[in-house]
Length: 104
Image (cartoon, rainbow, N blue to C red; front, side):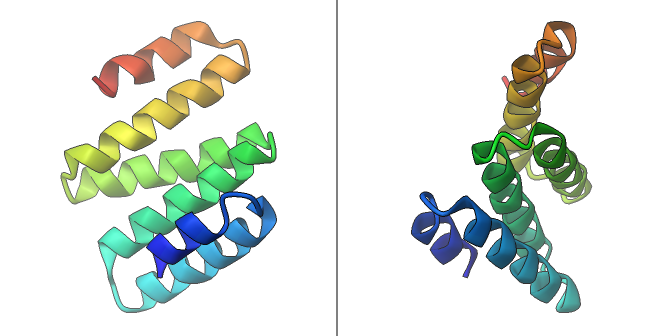
């Protein structure tokens, strides 16, 4: 389902956020950690496309924490890169560099 949300809604950020949030709740109800992580990523991307940087950051940080809890290096890297991008867009370059280094 998350893959569908990712590809279907690249143009429609608000729908991407709404569907991603629903997907997160469904994944949480069945304790599907990877689904939760993918959902947080989709919602974060949706908010970043709308230039709602604080909301995007919130979802990317939650995703990073969840990816760390299951020790998934691919997802940790994706979230760290996006957190760095959000800090960079807010002209907080020192903070951005911390996350860019993590994403290596």
